[in-house]
Length: 318
Image 1 (tube, one colour):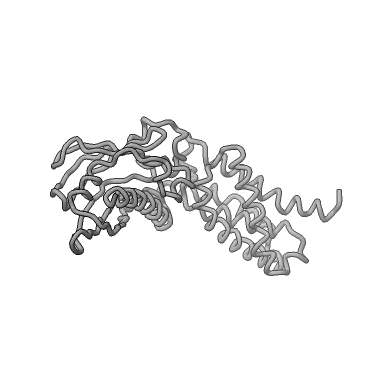
Image 2 (image 1 turned 135 degrees about the vertical axis):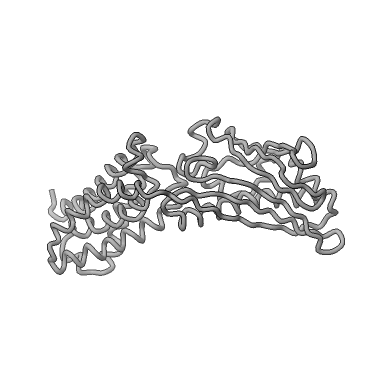
């Protein structure tokens, strides 16, 4: 085998295999108390180590180029992505969310690995330590109590119609056809799309089911109600009643890591026959990296809410 080809296979192949092995290890459900994919260890340390390994195993002449140290670690990351998608180990939605972090962390690891290699600072020992670092850090991380973070997602839309017609479309969302659905991000991520929702009556204690495709249902109970003005409702997803293929477990609404708590509609009059419809929601994240997961949760919830608001606007203005 050509020497250059052999070195290339080693430089990119070994980090890729290492990543796949760690993903399988961290994905074993019986070991969730020790290793977890939804951890800072996996999200930040793993790609950094992949980057350092890639550079350490590369030819020194290539490593001298800073561009190589920054971008070469991306190759095993993309190979890892392709393998996990092909084998259905990971879902596309999860990869879209973690890929920016993985690429940045891999580049940082590549710069560290390059420094060790070029300066010959016990690089072999340091890389050996790096390889086993996730196995040491993850159990410690799992011992730290997770503090759930609560976040708000706020959206609104202006509607040219009367209060009665707008509110009627808020409390009773009739069947939504595919062509009316504009939740492009959530569709791209593979989230179920909304179908319909209708209150059994208008007032406190009223109940409705917001029905989505693939069997997902948000069960909502009204806790505050002012006709044509405000409606607050608690939300509970039927997480354990839907097929496991509906959503990736790591972004499953109502699951272990991501849950929606309540929602609020408010109708504000701007001028005659022009109103602003506000829609708030409160959701919870339960990870060791809520600062990042919460940001994605807000984007997802805002996309869902904006989609519903656009449908209600269109119907109220017809």
